[in-house]
Every structure is written in structure tokens, then in C-alpha cells.
Length: 176
Image (cartoon, rainbow, N blue to C red):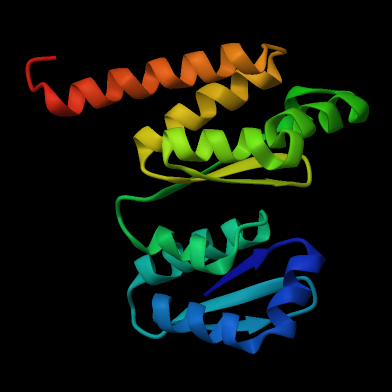
């Protein structure tokens, strides 16, 4: 049994829509119980892997992902990663600026990074989180890290696109 803490507003979202929790239980073969500020997960079998997957899915949901996207983590090829902007940048004002740069005007930057890399992105609290394959996450992180370090959007896109081209070439050329 594992207890997973997520932001209270995300716990409220699970409380509000019982179908979300039922979907999670079905996908992970676990029983989930909502407590004050956490979710308790217990596997219906002795398989600890089910609890591990449920923990990742709930953590991703807690970082702002829609549960349907978070459920991609049930697939062994998908991973979850987070960059804590608050830990890397001391100023609250600068954190807000970086988050705005990652999202972009009308969400255009986030949408572009998702479309090129294939990773799903959530900007929530002081974090930027990713769901995707290891390669997809690496490409998206390249762009986001460039923006965090103060690089231009053009530079972030160029670095991500170069990583994407390199990864694509490696997949198609076994001698690479």
C-alpha cells in the first residue's frame, strides 16, 4: 500500500468526478482511496508493479495532466519527468516569467514543443512535467532547459529540432 500526496485542488478534482478514480482503478488493477490530502493505493494482487504504475499516474495527474494522458504511463514505453523551476531559479518573479515563456502566447510554445517532440507537457505550480518516450522527453527537455537558461525561443526550437533530427536519423540508420 502506498500513500501519494498531490496538491489539494487536484485531490478535489478526483473527488468531484468519481469516474476518474474508477478509471484509474481499472487501468492499474488497484483500489484507490481519497484521504484529506492524499490518495492511498493498494494493489489487488501481490504485484507491486501495479502500485508503482498507479503512483506514477497519480503523481502525473497531481502535476496537472489530464488523467487520460497520465494513463499513458501504464505503457512500458512511456515515462514521466519533471523539472522544478522553483529549485533552479530563486526569484518568484523569474519563475513566473519562465513558465510564461514555456507556455507562450496563447499556448503556442507549449503546443510547438509537444508537436515536434511528441511529448505531452504540463506547466503546473513551479514545475514543467513531461509524459512520453525517453527520446520524446529528452527533446522537449532540451527546449524547456534552453528557455529556463534564458535562451530565445528560436534557440530553444533550433536545439530541439536538431535533437529530433538526430534521434530520427539514429532510428533509421542502424550504423549511426
